[in-house]
Length: 288
Image (cartoon, rainbow, N blue to C red; front, side, top):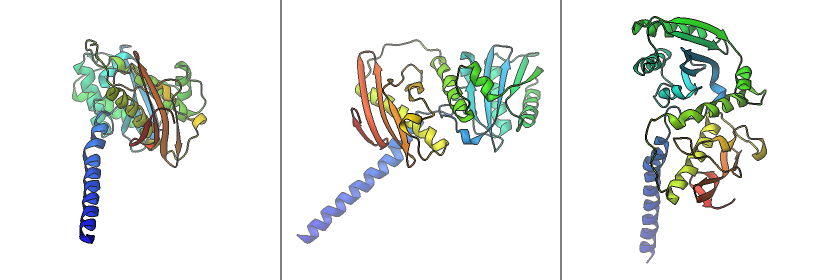
């Protein structure tokens, strides 16, 4: 009888271990696959410089450099710039990222011979390094352009985008969210009427929660009170087309590096809400 009890306990332990292994190797990676190279919210602590590139007033985007002299983030300032969205441009060497940028601009017919590229620098750090890399890649593709140089501050950019803050970190986050709002047209596809299931809506809530987790992780935030959060949850897109956003009753806070959130979304006549208790796997349906 005692041996049978021990065997039952071992069986339960093995099942729990196997289940945990499945979640780690399958479920979590599958969630991560829904996020591309441009989907992450900017890590403000890595920020070193922003350089804006405007080509012939037809495409306008910004590259964000970190202290490792890498393009670790992109800003999208118009709809045309979404050709660069999720193209794995970020986090390569400076030359590699610049090469991918220029190649895509040429491919999409935005960069031609004798074009004008206006570079707006928001700081000095690594600006000359990027300019040197840009000229080298342009020479590689045998494209001769006119380069115009300007300067601006982050807070001036924030003011232009109607972001009301004097905090540069908050400005970066708000600028990032505004730039991502252009993603609704990043793919030229015909709209189809799709009947959304509760499972689909739950996935959208999970996407929002994971975006907040990414924001917490990238910015190494230990604690952030509910009514003093820098990231506006209602501006986080739940879907890749940026058509679905959280209801204004949604909120989050961070405690001991864990994200606690109430997320509600409304799509057509359907509505779902979930309460997350510090983990994407610790949740319940309904209010917290």
